[in-house]
Length: 148
Image (tube, rainbow, N blue to C red):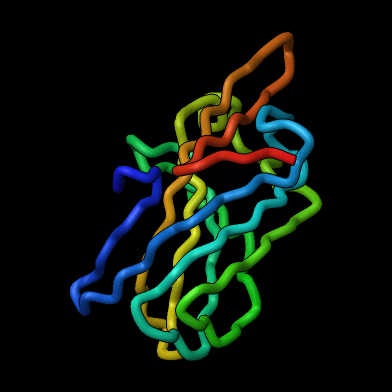
């Protein structure tokens, strides 16, 4: 992380991706584990990425890598040097997943791929899930959280 709070990562091809801002559009950062997910990301690349797409996954248990839920893909677009995307789903299907698997530390991952499906960058946001007052709740953490 740089001094101004931005996150910079590089892959073996030296394509630098700088995450400028992650904004959650849900009313609160803590909600039911299956509730809607709505966030946007502003980012900058070292060079344009043709046919860029972001694949969103939820890894339920970071330590055991027990369960990975594919949540969706942001439509392909050419990413200029500074770009953004928004991801929205009405709910996360956690049916059939044991409470012991849900109540854990997980990761929400957003992986940038180019038109050849080569992975260029992954944003990892920590998801803490716990049982509070009989309800299973999630709390998302990111490089920079700004809620609406």
